[in-house]
Amino acid sequence: MTAAVPTSTRAAVLRDFDQPLTIEEVPVPDLEPGALLIRVDCATVCGTDVHIQRGRLPAARLPLVAGHESTGTVIATNGRDRDAADRSVGIGDRIVFSYPWCGKCYWCTIARQPTLCESSRMYGWGPMTEGPGLTGTFSEIVYVRPDCQILRVPADLDPAVVASTTCALRSVMHGYERLTQSGPLLASDTVVVLGSGAVGLYASAVARRSGAANVVVFGAPEDRLDIGLAWGADRVADVTATTPEERRDIVLDLTAGRGADVVLDCAGPVAAFEEAMDLARRGGRVVEIGIGTTDAGTIHPYYLNIKMISVVGSVSGAIHHYHQALRFVESNGRHFDFTRLTTGGFSLDDVNQALAGVESQAHIKPHIQPSGL
Ligand SMILES: [Zn+2]
Ligand SMILES: [Zn+2]
Image (cartoon, rainbow, N blue to C red):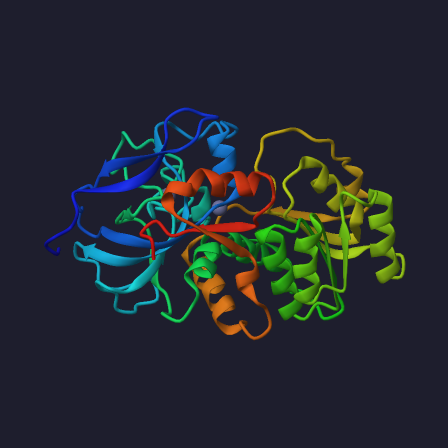
């Protein structure tokens, strides 16, 4: 423990669905053994934050401190001095942290699928009235629970890019892990990515660096597809200006009429999953990363039987996915300008503007500097 830890902090609180966040003074909890406090250097905004604000996700419980993506500098620790990669961590080090997967339940241990942990309490989902309430990242200070895994972050990495890896890219890494459990990505593969938000663009970058023969990105708006092209996509198409049939023709043209070997759905709408099944070749593979709703869709079992498509899904990420995500941006900066994803530079007081920017698609990954760095 250190002295001079603030007793309260400014944080963006959601009290009613469909209402703006309010900046409030929130108490800083006492540190349990193994807990840390970070001063947030940068927090990024995710579509999920907008869905929570709008009341579309039933698991969110009010009131809550919003936000789940961040990187910050340790300002206090109660006995934790190593990160998950066994490196020393102390006051003044910048870290990222995973959700608090419990490490004890059936999913964490026997199934080894910690992101399905039933006792986890995800940051930014509330409620702030239970346990240590300061578990949202749109805040000057965040309480990192003892059951969160942590990783020290190289000091020279852009903090906004780092914050964006803690949701978008770690989810992509989990998706690729699930994909490659049924075999590697091959140098002959055509990979189609549906969606050109941060998840989709990161997925296209990983496909490119994994050696896929063709990388295709279908999304919108145009400026995001430009990033896809700059990051090496062979073909892109604007989903607001093309029909599913036109997009299918693009894929068939690249694959001698067979269809995509791998489709990663990073888009969100249920219709995109159906398109993914349509674009995959016979015997191809589909990875579902993007669906964030419980809305129903129609999928013909024909795809699984006669077309023999394999489908895997993944949600969130465990600490090794965070580690892979950080290593990816650290070692691929010469191939991709990751800062093109992170726009804005908002103060905590402008958090509602940042959320609105995600909703209107004016920003891909707006970043907030709660401490005004
Ligand atoms: Zn997120
Ligand atoms: Zn668990």
